[in-house]
Length: 201
Ligand code: IMP
Image 1: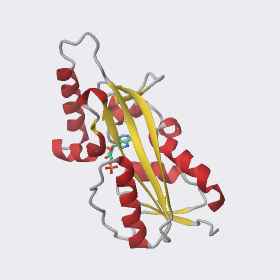
Image 2 (image 1 turned 45 degrees about the vertical axis):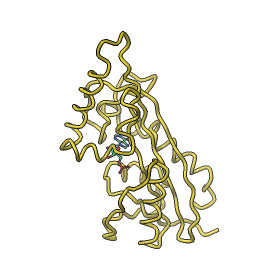
Image 3 (image 1 turned 120 degrees about the horizontal axis):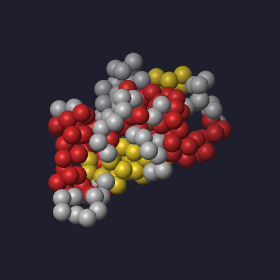
Image 4 (image 1 turned 90 degrees about the vertical axis):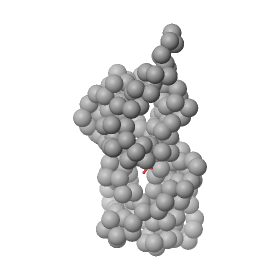
């Protein structure tokens, strides 16, 4: 078994890159797609898993390095799971995350009008794939349930300000970085993968 001494983190999203880098063992050298000018693939998958595998395969083939990639997003129950795999694309569509979050809050209010119980339930989902140049790959899913609230907090990235995980009273964006990282969807997926690759570190 060849030990992993360096790994390509196949994500051009700075927030996700940092979280994945901090989940991996410190001694492993982490490389970004930007360093190697690899561009990014079109996300044509229909699920988080399909897109995570597609990204890992793209970056792994281009770099010939062991690669870890994620595809993640926010699924809101009263919006039939939207934005889901389109979470990043909704930010582009509405002109940034702040505007996309405002739109989401409006949509939730509208759909819950006249209902006795306002359904704000949601979950963050992460598909995470590690792929070796040989083609071997391991994929796992991580999920964290919670509720959507009005924007609170300045930490984190993406939709962090509107998501309160179950059993907590603050949003991801109000949490300190390490507190979020210890419970979020990416760390849940990573811990499942870690169990299967311990011998490689
Ligand atoms: P993609 O996986 O590159 O398609 O992007 C997923 C999008 O979902 C990101 O742009 C984020 O905005 C959002 N997202 C995924 N994980 C998180 C998170 O931990 N916090 C906030 N937003 C997230």
